[in-house]
Image (cartoon, rainbow, N blue to C red):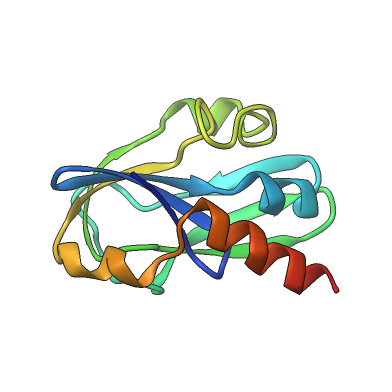
Length: 124
């Protein structure tokens, strides 16, 4: 189940874990990604709380967690290849995996149709 936050992060929820990254819209807005700072495994994150930083040739932006929990895995490939976020934001450009603390939080996130509508409104 793929869900989206208003801060343009996605969460692919599979049982009690969630894989997380930024949306295609977000990576297009940022431009060429040159650096990603992510928390270490074992770090506790809260929904909408600061997760890390992403830097592009245009700007540096904060990353926010779409869901609360504990970081159980970090995409180590991004350290040497941050451009994966541009190339495949919903695939190889994933950022972290989280052990979900509260399943109900995902109910407050948007599905794909709601997110597309949100982005269209934000553009205007």
